[in-house]
Length: 506
Image 1 (cartoon, rainbow, N blue to C red):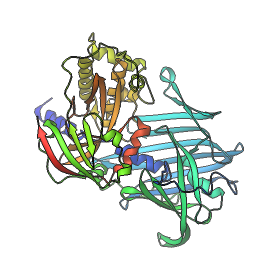
Image 2: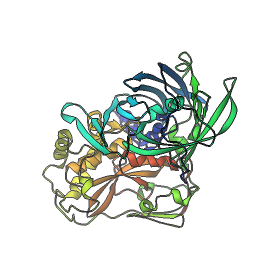
Image 3: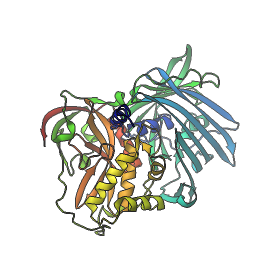
């Protein structure tokens, strides 16, 4: 390898250091066509739930165009047909985004069988981006949702307790075709998202009637208003319940289309998605890797929407809108020998496998043993595994659901893949580990980012994308946990502002 190749590779690694979970959250919005995981600040009185006034008695297909900042970046096609005293629903979505200057394509396929009230019976979901693919199946049995991921020896089943059968986001636009709506109605709908395993109630309000013009044609419509993770969203339905238009955050718009028009003239997004979500600050932070202490003022967010339990724990202190981050010190001596056996409290679950952190898989355990060798010191083992993930993974932006097993196989991904593989290797070695999602400073701005924390007497932060242990003081944790928690980061995008008050270097 010549000097030019080396420099090119170094530059490539630098460019992909700060890719964040934001793209995953953004994609989840698309999948539900903006009516998904909705939580109003104040829950309105529900006037209607899942009672239907009619039914769909014939095969129907819908095409939609997806726009980002007035630029067509994708399309979707969905179908519904009567099936076994209910319906079969299929939804395909095709998308192209600009991620760090590179065009990135992604496809999803959702198939589900629902009853005559659109409550879920079974489903299949697949997401593909380049060489990376993820799929999951599930079915409702009594008061549980049985989830299956992986294949053959890596096949695993997860059970989710249900208070009532959920609906799928792919079926929501069809739901309103099977009933008459009127202004003032509010619907409470239980929604399950297969890409994050999140199960929540959705509240949808029929806000009014109006006339809108779409591509030169005027329609009389109902306006439905929702709030998604603190985001305001709007959709317009005609008198038959067909969704004509939807708008969301960061310039996202979805329009009803036709089989000929929907797939045509798709362009790569002109604006880089990560740059759109970036947070600029008033003062440049030189040499951020050496920052030991950072004090910032957080603006733009309502106090109720900030998770102070996360902002005010460990290396972070938060009070009256001011956050202070201090890089933690590594312990002089490890307080235990592997595996960790001080089971108790919140630590025990963080030693166990979970959705997409397959720490009990044979391949993950074998790789953890290879990296660790004979070392039983958790500090040394954690450092070895951090270095291995940093060196072996090709740093590329991808749009998919991260899985430790898949990442180990493909050895490609952004910070999400780095963080989740490191967490799996740590747990497989007997070190409690958890995922952190928030912000990091790079190239003059804060970008959304994911990293890992390991329990070594205290929680120590580790960034396998940047090869840091502990991480610098520009890492600001906003959310903690697996994908069902990580999607909460959406409420910060485009709203949060930061102002530098003080900083110190080591």
